[in-house]
Image (cartoon, rainbow, N blue to C red; front, side, top):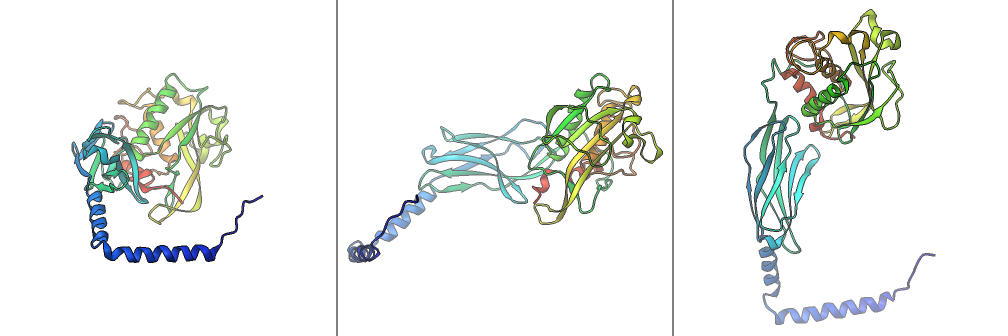
Amino acid sequence: MPFSRRVDVTRRRRTLLVLAAATALLAPQLPGAGASAAQAHASDQARIALSTTWSGQRFVAGERVRVTGAARPASAVRRVTLQRRTPGGWTKVAAVSPARARYSLPLPTGWYGEFTYRVVASGRAGAGRTVSATRRIQVVPAYDPRGSAGAHRLAAEPVARWEPCRVIGYRLNTSQAGPGARKDIRGALHRVYQATGLRFVYRGTTGIIPQDFINTYPDDTDLVFAWARPSQSPLLTMNGGRPMGVGGAAWAFGFRNADGSAASRIDSGYVVLDATQQDRLRAGFGRGVTRGELLMHEIGHAIGLQHVDDRRQLMYPLMQRGRARWGAGDLAGLAKVGANRGCLS
Protein backbone atom coordinates (compact mmCIF):
# COMPACT_ATOMS: atom_id res chain seq x y z
CA MET A 1 0.00 0.00 0.00
CA PRO A 2 1.46 3.41 -0.89
CA PHE A 3 2.29 5.70 2.01
CA SER A 4 0.26 8.89 2.13
CA ARG A 5 -0.07 11.81 4.46
CA ARG A 6 -2.49 14.73 4.59
CA VAL A 7 -0.77 18.11 4.77
CA ASP A 8 -2.38 21.17 6.32
CA VAL A 9 -1.62 23.55 3.43
CA THR A 10 -3.22 26.55 5.13
CA ARG A 11 -1.08 26.23 8.27
CA ARG A 12 2.10 25.68 6.22
CA ARG A 13 1.45 28.76 4.07
CA ARG A 14 0.86 30.86 7.19
CA THR A 15 4.18 29.69 8.66
CA LEU A 16 6.05 30.53 5.46
CA LEU A 17 4.55 34.00 5.45
CA VAL A 18 5.68 34.56 9.03
CA LEU A 19 9.21 33.41 8.15
CA ALA A 20 9.29 35.70 5.14
CA ALA A 21 8.19 38.64 7.28
CA ALA A 22 10.82 37.88 9.87
CA THR A 23 13.48 37.79 7.17
CA ALA A 24 12.32 41.10 5.82
CA LEU A 25 12.52 42.63 9.28
CA LEU A 26 16.03 41.28 9.88
CA ALA A 27 17.48 42.36 6.54
CA PRO A 28 17.58 46.11 7.22
CA GLN A 29 19.32 45.45 10.52
CA LEU A 30 22.24 43.63 8.71
CA PRO A 31 23.35 45.96 5.93
CA GLY A 32 25.64 44.29 3.39
CA ALA A 33 24.94 40.76 4.60
CA GLY A 34 23.84 39.64 1.14
CA ALA A 35 26.91 41.21 -0.51
CA SER A 36 29.22 39.56 2.01
CA ALA A 37 27.73 36.14 1.27
CA ALA A 38 28.18 36.69 -2.48
CA GLN A 39 31.79 37.78 -1.95
CA ALA A 40 32.48 34.71 0.18
CA HIS A 41 30.97 32.46 -2.49
CA ALA A 42 33.06 34.12 -5.21
CA SER A 43 36.12 33.65 -3.02
CA ASP A 44 35.31 29.94 -2.68
CA GLN A 45 34.85 29.62 -6.43
CA ALA A 46 38.33 31.05 -7.02
CA ARG A 47 40.11 28.98 -4.40
CA ILE A 48 41.56 26.28 -6.67
CA ALA A 49 44.67 27.28 -8.60
CA LEU A 50 45.37 24.76 -11.38
CA SER A 51 48.65 24.32 -13.24
CA THR A 52 49.16 21.79 -16.03
CA THR A 53 52.33 20.51 -17.70
CA TRP A 54 52.10 18.73 -21.06
CA SER A 55 55.27 16.89 -22.03
CA GLY A 56 54.77 17.54 -25.76
CA GLN A 57 52.25 17.64 -28.57
CA ARG A 58 53.32 14.77 -30.86
CA PHE A 59 53.77 11.20 -29.63
CA VAL A 60 54.36 7.78 -31.13
CA ALA A 61 51.50 5.34 -30.58
CA GLY A 62 52.06 3.29 -27.45
CA GLU A 63 54.45 5.81 -25.91
CA ARG A 64 53.94 6.20 -22.16
CA VAL A 65 53.00 9.81 -21.47
CA ARG A 66 51.62 11.56 -18.40
CA VAL A 67 50.05 14.94 -17.77
CA THR A 68 51.26 16.50 -14.53
CA GLY A 69 50.65 19.62 -12.52
CA ALA A 70 49.30 20.96 -9.26
CA ALA A 71 45.88 21.93 -7.89
CA ARG A 72 46.12 24.12 -4.80
CA PRO A 73 45.21 24.15 -2.02
CA ALA A 74 44.98 20.37 -1.81
CA SER A 75 42.37 20.57 0.95
CA ALA A 76 39.91 22.17 -1.49
CA VAL A 77 40.42 19.66 -4.34
CA ARG A 78 38.07 16.72 -4.62
CA ARG A 79 39.22 15.32 -7.98
CA VAL A 80 41.41 16.13 -10.98
CA THR A 81 40.13 14.77 -14.30
CA LEU A 82 41.65 14.49 -17.78
CA GLN A 83 38.96 14.95 -20.46
CA ARG A 84 39.00 14.44 -24.23
CA ARG A 85 36.79 16.35 -26.62
CA THR A 86 34.52 14.07 -28.66
CA PRO A 87 31.72 14.82 -31.12
CA GLY A 88 29.28 14.34 -28.23
CA GLY A 89 31.11 16.64 -25.79
CA TRP A 90 33.86 16.25 -23.20
CA THR A 91 34.56 12.67 -22.07
CA LYS A 92 36.46 11.55 -18.97
CA VAL A 93 39.67 9.71 -19.79
CA ALA A 94 41.35 9.45 -16.39
CA ALA A 95 40.83 10.87 -12.91
CA VAL A 96 42.62 11.00 -9.60
CA SER A 97 41.86 12.29 -6.10
CA PRO A 98 45.26 13.72 -5.15
CA ALA A 99 46.30 13.42 -1.51
CA ARG A 100 48.68 16.34 -2.10
CA ALA A 101 48.57 19.28 -4.45
CA ARG A 102 50.54 17.49 -7.19
CA TYR A 103 48.72 15.22 -9.64
CA SER A 104 49.76 12.89 -12.47
CA LEU A 105 47.40 11.45 -15.10
CA PRO A 106 48.09 9.02 -17.99
CA LEU A 107 47.62 10.51 -21.46
CA PRO A 108 46.26 7.86 -23.87
CA THR A 109 48.41 7.17 -26.94
CA GLY A 110 46.76 3.92 -28.01
CA TRP A 111 45.52 4.93 -31.43
CA TYR A 112 46.52 7.38 -34.14
CA GLY A 113 44.90 10.75 -34.63
CA GLU A 114 44.61 14.30 -33.36
CA PHE A 115 42.90 14.79 -30.01
CA THR A 116 41.99 17.76 -27.83
CA TYR A 117 42.37 17.42 -24.06
CA ARG A 118 41.86 19.53 -20.96
CA VAL A 119 42.29 19.09 -17.21
CA VAL A 120 39.49 19.87 -14.78
CA ALA A 121 39.96 20.31 -11.01
CA SER A 122 36.69 19.80 -9.12
CA GLY A 123 36.46 21.31 -5.68
CA ARG A 124 34.93 20.10 -2.46
CA ALA A 125 31.72 21.67 -1.17
CA GLY A 126 31.77 25.37 -1.97
CA ALA A 127 35.10 25.31 -3.82
CA GLY A 128 33.79 25.20 -7.41
CA ARG A 129 36.03 23.91 -10.20
CA THR A 130 38.84 25.13 -12.42
CA VAL A 131 39.39 24.18 -16.07
CA SER A 132 42.76 24.31 -17.84
CA ALA A 133 43.37 25.59 -21.33
CA THR A 134 42.87 22.96 -24.04
CA ARG A 135 45.78 21.08 -25.57
CA ARG A 136 45.95 19.56 -29.05
CA ILE A 137 47.75 16.19 -29.10
CA GLN A 138 48.83 14.18 -32.14
CA VAL A 139 49.50 10.42 -31.98
CA VAL A 140 51.37 9.00 -34.97
CA PRO A 141 52.83 5.66 -36.15
CA ALA A 142 56.46 4.83 -35.47
CA TYR A 143 57.05 4.88 -39.25
CA ASP A 144 56.29 7.29 -42.10
CA PRO A 145 53.11 6.03 -43.88
CA ARG A 146 53.48 5.80 -47.65
CA GLY A 147 51.31 7.32 -50.35
CA SER A 148 48.49 9.84 -50.30
CA ALA A 149 45.81 10.16 -47.63
CA GLY A 150 43.27 10.30 -50.45
CA ALA A 151 44.04 6.71 -51.51
CA HIS A 152 41.16 5.01 -49.71
CA ARG A 153 37.64 3.80 -50.49
CA LEU A 154 34.80 3.09 -48.10
CA ALA A 155 32.65 0.00 -48.54
CA ALA A 156 29.32 1.84 -48.24
CA GLU A 157 27.66 5.22 -48.60
CA PRO A 158 26.67 6.45 -46.09
CA VAL A 159 29.70 5.13 -44.22
CA ALA A 160 29.32 1.69 -42.63
CA ARG A 161 30.97 1.47 -39.20
CA TRP A 162 31.14 -0.82 -36.21
CA GLU A 163 29.65 0.66 -33.05
CA PRO A 164 32.84 2.01 -31.40
CA CYS A 165 31.25 2.44 -27.98
CA ARG A 166 31.15 -1.30 -27.33
CA VAL A 167 33.65 -4.11 -27.81
CA ILE A 168 33.69 -6.38 -30.88
CA GLY A 169 33.69 -10.04 -29.85
CA TYR A 170 35.54 -12.45 -32.11
CA ARG A 171 36.01 -16.22 -32.36
CA LEU A 172 38.63 -18.33 -34.12
CA ASN A 173 38.42 -21.47 -36.24
CA THR A 174 42.10 -22.33 -36.63
CA SER A 175 41.85 -26.11 -37.00
CA GLN A 176 43.32 -25.86 -40.52
CA ALA A 177 45.67 -22.95 -39.86
CA GLY A 178 49.44 -23.13 -39.65
CA PRO A 179 51.59 -22.54 -36.55
CA GLY A 180 51.44 -19.04 -35.09
CA ALA A 181 48.07 -18.16 -36.63
CA ARG A 182 46.54 -16.97 -33.37
CA LYS A 183 49.53 -14.80 -32.61
CA ASP A 184 49.25 -13.16 -36.04
CA ILE A 185 45.52 -12.52 -35.52
CA ARG A 186 46.26 -10.77 -32.25
CA GLY A 187 48.98 -8.74 -33.95
CA ALA A 188 46.69 -7.75 -36.83
CA LEU A 189 43.85 -6.73 -34.49
CA HIS A 190 46.26 -4.63 -32.44
CA ARG A 191 47.31 -2.79 -35.60
CA VAL A 192 43.64 -2.22 -36.44
CA TYR A 193 43.06 -0.85 -32.94
CA GLN A 194 45.98 1.54 -33.35
CA ALA A 195 44.44 2.88 -36.57
CA THR A 196 40.79 3.02 -35.43
CA GLY A 197 40.39 2.82 -31.65
CA LEU A 198 38.02 -0.14 -32.16
CA ARG A 199 38.32 -2.66 -29.33
CA PHE A 200 38.30 -6.42 -29.95
CA VAL A 201 37.69 -9.12 -27.32
CA TYR A 202 38.46 -12.83 -27.77
CA ARG A 203 35.38 -15.04 -27.18
CA GLY A 204 36.96 -18.45 -27.79
CA THR A 205 37.10 -21.01 -30.56
CA THR A 206 34.34 -22.07 -32.94
CA GLY A 207 33.61 -24.63 -35.63
CA ILE A 208 31.88 -22.01 -37.79
CA ILE A 209 33.09 -21.43 -41.34
CA PRO A 210 31.36 -18.31 -42.76
CA GLN A 211 29.38 -19.10 -45.91
CA ASP A 212 27.95 -15.79 -47.07
CA PHE A 213 27.85 -12.06 -46.40
CA ILE A 214 25.31 -12.67 -43.61
CA ASN A 215 26.13 -15.37 -41.05
CA THR A 216 24.64 -16.60 -37.78
CA TYR A 217 27.01 -16.38 -34.82
CA PRO A 218 26.68 -16.90 -31.05
CA ASP A 219 25.19 -13.94 -29.21
CA ASP A 220 28.56 -12.80 -27.85
CA THR A 221 30.28 -12.99 -31.27
CA ASP A 222 30.45 -10.33 -33.98
CA LEU A 223 33.44 -11.43 -36.05
CA VAL A 224 34.74 -14.89 -37.03
CA PHE A 225 38.18 -15.84 -38.37
CA ALA A 226 38.34 -19.21 -40.13
CA TRP A 227 40.75 -21.22 -42.26
CA ALA A 228 38.96 -23.41 -44.79
CA ARG A 229 39.32 -25.26 -48.08
CA PRO A 230 37.54 -23.69 -51.08
CA SER A 231 35.00 -26.52 -51.03
CA GLN A 232 34.00 -25.54 -47.50
CA SER A 233 33.03 -21.93 -48.15
CA PRO A 234 31.56 -20.31 -51.29
CA LEU A 235 33.28 -17.09 -50.23
CA LEU A 236 36.62 -18.56 -51.40
CA THR A 237 35.38 -19.27 -54.94
CA MET A 238 33.21 -16.21 -55.48
CA ASN A 239 33.42 -14.73 -59.00
CA GLY A 240 35.40 -17.75 -60.16
CA GLY A 241 38.64 -16.64 -58.46
CA ARG A 242 40.96 -18.29 -55.98
CA PRO A 243 41.84 -15.58 -53.46
CA MET A 244 44.17 -16.34 -50.59
CA GLY A 245 41.58 -14.82 -48.28
CA VAL A 246 38.35 -12.86 -48.14
CA GLY A 247 36.88 -10.44 -45.64
CA GLY A 248 33.58 -8.67 -45.40
CA ALA A 249 30.75 -7.40 -43.25
CA ALA A 250 26.97 -7.04 -43.09
CA TRP A 251 25.42 -3.75 -42.05
CA ALA A 252 22.09 -2.05 -41.46
CA PHE A 253 21.05 1.41 -42.64
CA GLY A 254 19.32 4.15 -40.68
CA PHE A 255 21.94 5.24 -38.11
CA ARG A 256 23.77 8.49 -37.45
CA ASN A 257 27.26 9.46 -36.41
CA ALA A 258 27.75 11.65 -33.35
CA ASP A 259 27.93 14.76 -35.57
CA GLY A 260 24.48 13.97 -37.02
CA SER A 261 25.64 12.69 -40.41
CA ALA A 262 24.07 9.53 -41.83
CA ALA A 263 25.74 6.17 -41.20
CA SER A 264 25.19 2.42 -41.37
CA ARG A 265 26.02 0.07 -38.51
CA ILE A 266 28.07 -3.06 -39.13
CA ASP A 267 26.51 -5.95 -37.19
CA SER A 268 28.70 -8.90 -38.22
CA GLY A 269 31.91 -9.62 -40.10
CA TYR A 270 34.12 -12.44 -41.29
CA VAL A 271 37.65 -13.26 -42.39
CA VAL A 272 38.16 -16.56 -44.23
CA LEU A 273 41.61 -17.66 -45.40
CA ASP A 274 42.28 -20.44 -47.92
CA ALA A 275 43.91 -23.22 -45.92
CA THR A 276 45.33 -24.81 -49.11
CA GLN A 277 47.47 -21.73 -49.85
CA GLN A 278 48.90 -21.04 -46.40
CA ASP A 279 52.29 -22.56 -47.24
CA ARG A 280 52.85 -19.55 -49.54
CA LEU A 281 52.76 -17.19 -46.57
CA ARG A 282 55.41 -16.34 -44.04
CA ALA A 283 54.31 -15.86 -40.45
CA GLY A 284 54.38 -12.39 -38.91
CA PHE A 285 54.45 -8.89 -40.36
CA GLY A 286 57.96 -8.59 -41.81
CA ARG A 287 59.16 -8.41 -45.39
CA GLY A 288 57.82 -10.78 -47.98
CA VAL A 289 54.35 -12.22 -48.53
CA THR A 290 53.14 -12.60 -44.95
CA ARG A 291 50.11 -13.89 -43.14
CA GLY A 292 50.10 -10.68 -41.12
CA GLU A 293 49.65 -8.54 -44.23
CA LEU A 294 46.85 -10.80 -45.50
CA LEU A 295 45.03 -10.61 -42.15
CA MET A 296 45.31 -6.82 -41.96
CA HIS A 297 43.95 -6.49 -45.51
CA GLU A 298 40.96 -8.77 -44.88
CA ILE A 299 40.16 -7.17 -41.53
CA GLY A 300 40.18 -3.86 -43.40
CA HIS A 301 37.30 -5.22 -45.49
CA ALA A 302 35.54 -6.49 -42.37
CA ILE A 303 35.53 -3.02 -40.81
CA GLY A 304 34.36 -1.09 -43.86
CA LEU A 305 37.15 -0.51 -46.42
CA GLN A 306 37.32 -1.40 -50.11
CA HIS A 307 40.17 -2.00 -52.55
CA VAL A 308 42.23 0.90 -53.88
CA ASP A 309 44.49 1.39 -56.91
CA ASP A 310 47.56 2.60 -54.99
CA ARG A 311 50.14 -0.17 -54.56
CA ARG A 312 51.54 1.59 -51.49
CA GLN A 313 48.38 0.83 -49.50
CA LEU A 314 47.54 -2.45 -47.78
CA MET A 315 44.07 -2.25 -49.30
CA TYR A 316 45.57 -2.72 -52.76
CA PRO A 317 44.08 -6.03 -54.08
CA LEU A 318 47.44 -7.75 -54.62
CA MET A 319 49.87 -8.54 -51.83
CA GLN A 320 53.18 -6.71 -51.75
CA ARG A 321 56.57 -7.79 -50.40
CA GLY A 322 57.30 -4.95 -48.00
CA ARG A 323 56.57 -4.80 -44.30
CA ALA A 324 52.91 -5.07 -43.33
CA ARG A 325 52.19 -1.43 -42.52
CA TRP A 326 49.19 0.77 -43.13
CA GLY A 327 49.72 3.42 -45.80
CA ALA A 328 48.58 7.02 -45.53
CA GLY A 329 45.41 6.23 -47.51
CA ASP A 330 44.67 3.17 -45.37
CA LEU A 331 44.95 5.26 -42.22
CA ALA A 332 42.70 8.01 -43.56
CA GLY A 333 40.02 5.46 -44.47
CA LEU A 334 40.34 3.65 -41.14
CA ALA A 335 39.94 6.95 -39.30
CA LYS A 336 36.59 7.48 -41.07
CA VAL A 337 35.24 4.20 -39.69
CA GLY A 338 36.93 4.48 -36.31
CA ALA A 339 36.15 5.58 -32.77
CA ASN A 340 37.04 9.23 -33.27
CA ARG A 341 33.70 9.81 -35.00
CA GLY A 342 31.86 8.94 -31.80
CA CYS A 343 29.07 6.53 -30.97
CA LEU A 344 26.32 5.60 -33.41
CA SER A 345 22.72 6.48 -32.69
